Length: 263
Image (cartoon, rainbow, N blue to C red):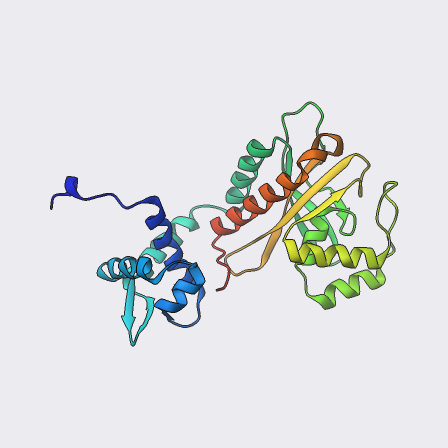
């Protein structure tokens, strides 16, 4: 059969190949076909043919009924690591921020946690092109409890850190509707852990809605929080969409940094 006669793999098959390799990367142990079927929510019959093709190229190896990564995968991994070395993480984050601005049309920020005084600092910003937009400068600092980025960063910290922060917190009312009750804040953080997205309306500033999700690096550590800041009046009817878009963008940036969720 000539190359012209061969059918090109479907996009779904390509995606499944990538997901197989990701699952094997994320697992501490080799995985059986049944394991992969469960993790990827894909029929075993669909995965078996893909695994055979990967095995032919030495991307995976079968032994004793389980599958593990092969020499081909590690060779590709080394090449990708070298390619990634040529890109700065900050460039990858900023590129993701630019894409998000194009999608949502609002200002996008990147914030990091200062663990010394438990505040956030904005370290990058891509501004909206709207005449009316949220304005912030790189280097601006904000309290965690009243900002979407701060709450997202808090929610990613261990329980003991959150409890200690709330215990010593003396919250100020920065806007008429700022939440200052510690129990309300604890419930808000628990909800962020459930959904993966923080959203604040008129908390740090009246008339500003923030939506945030954390970005993780290859080691699984929190690199910072991706934040969309928008006028509350303009975003009132699209808050759910903003939450979805921010979560998707944070996931995409994390993947570009090498983060793979554990199976």
